[in-house]
Length: 123
Length: 96
Image 1 (cartoon, one colour):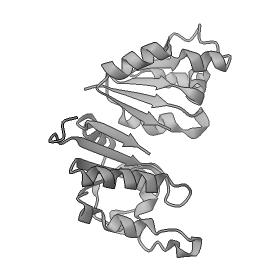
Image 2: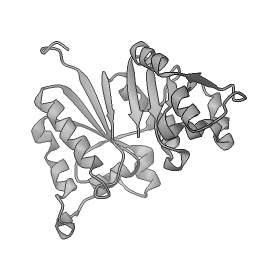
Image 3: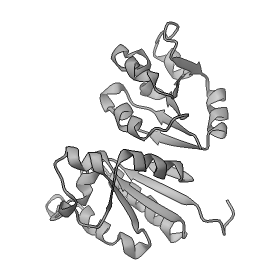
Image 4: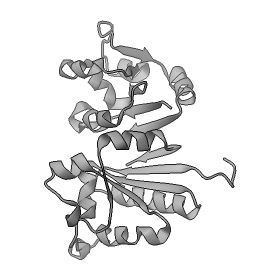
C-alpha cells in the first residue's frame, strides 16, 4: 500500500462490552487505523450494540468503561459511527439509550457500506 | 465487488445467521475449522439457495470425518484453492 493512499476500513464490533476483550481489540485496531489517517467506519451490531448503552460503570469489575472510551471516538478522527437498526430493535433499545450519536442503519445499507470498504475487520 | 466470507465456528455460534444479512449477491461463503459442521447440518441447507456460492475446506472436512459427497450445494476446496480465492475476491471478511 502506498503511504499516501487513503483506504476505507470498516470495523464491525459484534460482542457485548465486558464478556471478552474483543470490543477493546476492535477499538484499538480502529484507533490505530485512524492515527494513520485512513477513512474509518465503525459499526456496532448484534450484542455489540450493548457497548453503546449509557450509564456504564465498569469500576466494580476492575475494567475500563467502554462507553466512556466510545464517547471519545470523534476526538481520534472516527466520526462515521453506525449502529445496526435490526440489532438495536431486537434488543428493545432506542437511539436515545446510546452514549454517542450513531447512524441508525438497516442491513441493506450496511451491505452497501461493506461493499464500498477496502478492508473489513470483523470482531 | 465481491466478498469471500469465512465462517470458522460450529452452528452453535449462530455465525451464519449473523453473516447472512450482510452478504451481497455474488459473494462466497467458505466454511473452515469447526465451521465445516454447517455443511452437514440439514436444517441449515435450506438457506443454501440464495445467490451465493458455498464452499467447505477439504482439509477441515476430512479431519472431522464429514461426508459431503451427497451435498451438492457445497463446493469442497483445498488450501491451495483457498489461497487463490483470497486473491480472486475483492476482500475477505472473517467471521469468528
